[in-house]
Length: 332
Image (cartoon, rainbow, N blue to C red):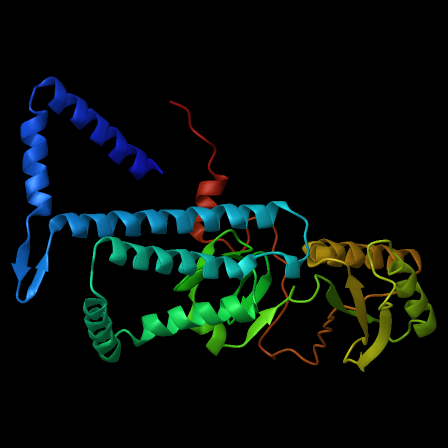
């Protein structure tokens, strides 16, 4: 909008300046002659006015596509509709449709023959063969993502080492906002070629897994009962029900595996911390030991030359230090 308003303001200012200087007719005739004069390039005739009209219509269509996509995305984020009812990545199809429609309208208005467009597309295909495979792959992948909708704007996804929230599904690449605040741009081809984990594809529930170790001398039935009492909370789902399983006999502890579900993954980190704190306090109240590594050092013998000696004050110091320590301080 800023660039469009600046161009409009400059046009109005230039018109007013030329009009008040009395140069409007001369200026208008020269511009009209420049734009409407037939010119020849090889066997093709063209006018600069047709080229300018083509560029203006294409710019307007791109402007409309970007703004319609922006407001559609904002509406999706502000409403509480379900994932299937939102436009999401289908906004990309709207953008492409408006751009292609604007292109053909611009070509018709500029009287560009279809055979010339075919020549341009043929040259483009040659360019694809020489080095644009990646760009076309990402473009086609973006269209596939828009139709299949494996990801939507607002989904929590994981691709390789990248984890975050989908903020935009573009023509060439998609934008993911990581949990640390950074924004990661991932080519659309990578979203289809790599294994993609979508945590919110069908619902936003999240299973939390914890491992807790207790000492071998603990009452295992009591331990399980205490943990089950901790997991009886409002924010923990009752279906599927929480599970407490004895997992392993470790070197210094008996390990329990805790499995429970929360309604939305937005709170899973907070709930994990809350449950861990509650288990730690409950174990302390019920005298249940959480073992930690201990090391005992046994000294079987000492070298024969090594002797223990307790030194008194000043003993064992060098003679020069001993003299300094014994001399009284002098004052000037």
